[in-house]
Length: 94
Image 1 (cartoon, rainbow, N blue to C red):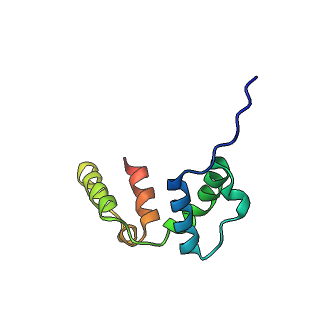
Image 2: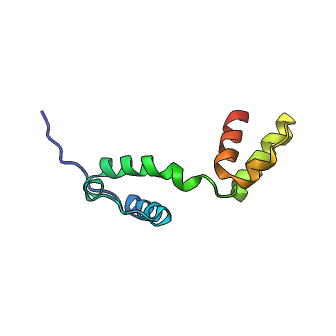
Image 3: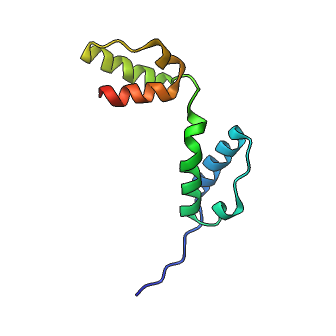
């Protein structure tokens, strides 16, 4: 049938992967930089480490407060200090 060559990573992917690598203080393996699919896989494996631990964003807080008012549920205090927890609270209460 048709044979397709693997696509190279996009600039947006490369920039995002480099930002993750800087925050984690680790290099991106050369093999992961060769194709769009390989880099996407590397990003998926490492992005969760990058997002946990930081405080919730203002957009997360605003959305969570809207849900809280509608459903009349309190947002736990620890959610405001951890973006990952806030994300899980939002997903559980949509």
